[in-house]
Structures are given as structure tokens and as C-alpha cells.
Image (cartoon, rainbow, N blue to C red; front, side, top):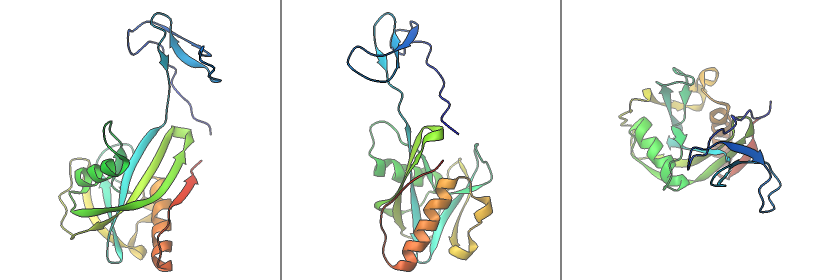
Length: 183
């Protein structure tokens, strides 16, 4: 399945109609170009940033209180905001969704999800304790050992892949950076 983008119809700067054509700057892709102010509208993937919060042999999962996949379990994550780094965004999402205290660690997984125009980045995050104050996006925040993970109730494949890599690396005694594409 390929990404189904929504075509831009109006310029975000002046509101005039746009036309899709090759820009005059040598670009090789058709872009939405304003018929009045000539602004070229580039369409780029969205970054989803999050963490794998852990303490001892358990990881923290959050039960979603919002769509999509309300009621399913996920790692704390969400869309990166302008003006923040990837790790700052991951830390913000973890604080908002789980109300956890933690130390942000290194980048752990980078997953391209071209069919939805996203890139997911997860960082390791060592929890200070098991005290959580979930925000409105989370029904419940709970710690799980590997054999307790509700695998069939995970919200997203990126979460499943990240958790599988986490537990494999934990068993191996070394954590790497994992890059993959989710079709």
C-alpha cells in the first residue's frame, strides 16, 4: 500500500489556488506552487517521537484514551513539535502521557512508515520509580515484564517492533540502534 496524500488546493501564505508543476529551481518532483505569490509547498513526513521507559526487567506501557486505537497499549509517543529536538519531544510525550520521572537515554529505533508519511523515533528512558500520573490521553500506565506484554493488544506495529528489539537487546546485554521500514 502506498501513501495516499491529500492534495494541497490553496496557498498557506496567501490563500490563492495552487498548481502542481515542477518548480523552476531544478527540483525533479511536482510540487504545489501558488499561482499568485509563487510559494512552493513542500510536503514532508511527520516525526513521531517516544520512549521505551524501563526499570529493571519491566517496561512501561500506556493504554490509549484517544483515537486511533483507543483502549490499546502503546509506548508513550506522539508527534514532534516545532522548536524541539527529537529527544525533547520524546521526553515531553512521556511526561504528558505517563506522568513518569525518568532519564532520557540514547536513540533506540528509527522506523520509516511511508504509507502514512511518518518516521517514528524511540529513545531508551530509564525510569526513576514506578509512580505515574497519566495525562488525559492515557487510561492507564502500567509496568510489564516481557511475558506479560499484551502483544495482541498493542496499538501500532512500530511499538511491537520496538519492544521486540528492546527485549532481544536486553537479553544480549547490549543496546544498538535499529532502523527498519514498516510497510
